[in-house]
Image 1 (cartoon, rainbow, N blue to C red):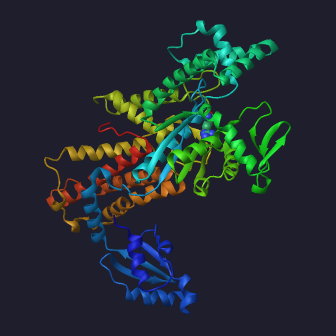
Image 2: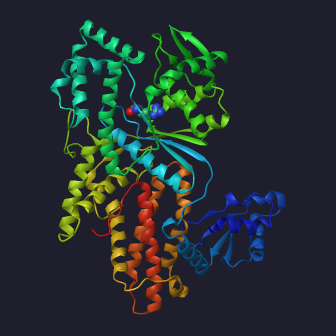
Length: 562
Ligand code: ARG
């Protein structure tokens, strides 16, 4: 794949002795050239003023890639040869089609996301980890990384002792074949009210103990809760097109606690504090110590995360291992990653750990249709979005076939895209009506542009071949703008994984859709001049393809009509 920065850097490297690749930047403003190289870093070594260096370099560099070079105030501005770039991009596209922009990066990445808690609702907070994580997973994979998507289920804790007790008492009153989680939550709330009675509480504690010891009855109930919860989660995952490579509960890590204690002990890191075993992290710049074993001998959330790190490093030999959770877990992951340094792991496994945190979603009051208790389930959000999308789409196009399928793609797409449109760390207001707008920076806007291209392409009686293209028909600024964006698809994906920020792709897609819209409004795509027509059609078919691939990577499906 063409790498313009690399080409320019190679040309410069023949002339200068500094590392040039990372100094070259793309120029975002219009009419100032495409790439710039600042000569300031060379001034000292060459004992010359930067503008003089730029002047001299300007005259000495020649390449078919470059149309002209300008030297301005110590910067070397490169204007890329439009036709050359267009040709290369089109040929690359011709050779890859649906796989355009794919990478062949090396390395293994664990992406942990979603990770809901069993017998607890899959609520709006879990929505963000699910959507952000899924998008990152897809992009890593597309770039060629060996990618492992992990769902670290919360299936462990003393609350299961209570739930078992509640189920024993009232299980028969509930039909768990529909909405099992709602009912398990009800049972849980009910037993909690009884727990003021010390006797009941004692029974709950004992259930948990039995569960830990592998008591058949307790384990079978716990398994049942887990399976019921999973079946409900799976409905949501299916709607969103999400699959995991590994689904593993926290409970499976409990047995590794003693190994962790031994290693930390051996490394002189374990301290006793009020009967608990902890690691002091003062020297790591963290004021709160990390508990490894509570005074009653049980593990905590962090202990199980440490065990999971050990497991993943052994099982996957990862280069990077990311955790997508809310920023309220910042301290937790700081502690866990700090303690991981003392577990005798290869440093690469510790250095590869990264917490990808995100801000909170707030609901626009009164906008959500279904409120049960004080939580809102992701499933309800999606259904609400689909229903609203259906109303909008059928309003616009009453004769549409497969309206339910389109509504699903538009509704879910709107929620997914809305979630992925801003830097993940920002707190957000969840406003489905805004997300469903057909105008503005929304998913329906992109889908609509895609559908419009598709409808033009359907009008053609034969496919345009790359040999039909006359490149001089694409010399206008808007065509070139589209070509440059197409060229940058792969770079955009690389930036997404560099920063673990899906919004970089979302914004790229909006810009591409907007530029296409300008193009469409400015030029007649199906021109009477066949050379013009073929060239334009080929260009917009690439745009359609990238809109689709890009949206798919974010976790969005595209309708063909809407
Ligand atoms: N189950 C947790 C929750 O719902 C999230 C787990 C995040 N992952 C982890 N490795 N700790 O809050």
